[in-house]
Length: 325
Image 1 (cartoon, rainbow, N blue to C red):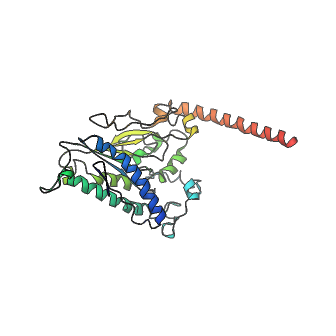
Image 2 (cartoon, one colour):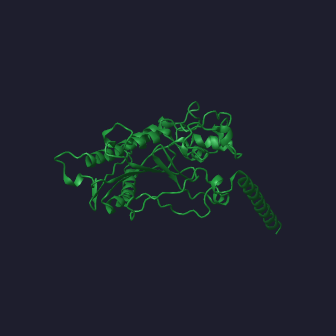
Image 3 (cartoon, rainbow, N blue to C red):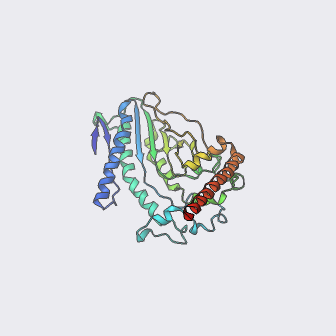
């Protein structure tokens, strides 16, 4: 715990990191990130803004129902994590447990987040509901704008999946939404996309006004969750939380208009604005909304195959010429 220009920064390393060098590296990285992020709270005395980085892995809980036929060869799917990640014995994947997904790892990371969440929640409670004899430094600004921005690499719910087209629909419409010719890949990705427990955890940090918790009695808390992993742009609000993904993507994904060809940083919070948050254009399925839809996507796929074929043929021809020499 240390003070930064009057703003408190709480640094809580996962309790199970035993390697000293790894623990030190984690502390240095987290301290750097939080020092920068908490600057937003310092710049505006009327804004009570919290940032929280969350640990998580995927656990198969975002699997799309009724897609067993599309995932029949999941255990042989060349997902890079399956080949590059080596897990301790207690987390070894089991065939009967989503094939090659590590067992119990997500629950372990859930515990890692608990300490930081408890610290944040306690700090919020002390500021919003100070005791009569509390130190004035812990009091919240008068009528503050209460905001929380959480971050994770993996997806927190099914609504964040690339092909979930209606965020207000609780059921995946398989026949309608798998309309792009790559349903098997999409179904397999859902298994390694993230964890629904993450959404439950981030929503528990500071409950909304619909909750009976005393943490939410004064007014709503504006909550933004930034995630990554899927390489598919998103910006939408679901049950009071705004979800944002602004990926760079691979060059081939930009060429296919799966992501913006002119991708740039997205401003989601402006310290010069009284309201802080910067609204964004709704994005659900970028390639459909901005890239011309299924027909345009299929044309680009055909064109890309032709270009790749031409490159391969040229490489073969060049190799033959070198061999002859």
